[in-house]
Length: 480
Image 1: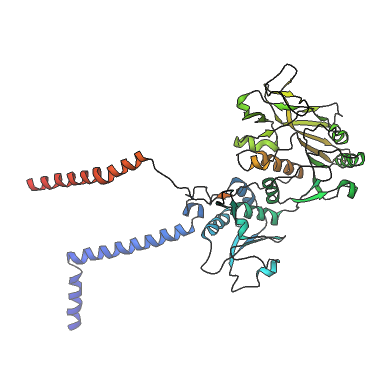
Image 2: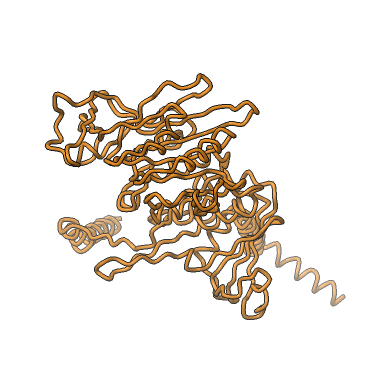
């Protein structure tokens, strides 16, 4: 009997209005909590590009099209090991790596604590790597990246420093390196007062995973079999007859070469013989641009027009100009019909060529005896040999294609042209030319007018509007 009373009492509680409202509230609360859990689980499953929007000034976390092309095309598994002590990871680097994982199932990221696992780095001959370094590994090979390579610090003449984040450039280059079937070797000739590549250009080639070696033709007496591209960088003294014969024989057997030429009053007969064997000859003057919209500051600093070719396609699509400095014209000579010539860079119809007197020009203006343009400033020669080998020769008629003072300061395509030329000849399509991104915090300083407006709005106008609104509402309620 007592149990029935208790049962009836409890039943009566759930028949009241309060009990109904309480039940609805409880059910609704459960639904809201369940939805929150589901939404959080779904959000965690989203890719990093959706979860973490890149609002950094230099787009530190945004992956370039080059990276997407390389990573999305992976066929080999790649493991990226980060070396961080537990609870001391680099959020910037880890956010970037998460975006790599989102691009491909072939990418795996794993952190190794160098304190609790001190022998791990020794497995990669990398005992000197400190916390913050990265190891990228595939079944073919591995590559180590130190923290100082990821975060670059540069020093100005006034002792100020700027820091750049090169995480994407280094990691994408490492992925390309560890998955590439072959790694091309570039040989550059020495012994003829050749120019040297700028730091920016050399870094770009290193990132593209080219191995660069010097070559003395006189000492070696041959061009190595593993030569991917032979580079002759604006010699100031002539080749010997034997050296020129070695280069010509190498090219006629399906070799590939990149050549810079330079204006010089010294006659380079044997060097020119190499070019003439493929229908090219540089002029004795310097090209000036007469169209003011096609040069930078000086008529000798030319913005050339691009020819249509794979080498120039990236620059064309991005609308990034090249800057060609103190170049000679590349003319065409009679050559066998099997050689095809493709202009890569040309000047406008307003250009002209001047021949210096005693190494100097009296004026930069066009004179009566100057030769009219247009002119070719870069040329590609190709020939299919009798044994179906494809000879390729790219010539730039300036020693300043990758001059450091220009390529590091201006948004120009010169380094890309260098890398793309070598990549085209080596059939190395995944060349990496990703620049470091600035980590310098930009301070936004508002104008005096903006400061005055903000003070007027927040100190006077907004409080006044709120006060008047409150008074109006109070008066209306009083009248009811």
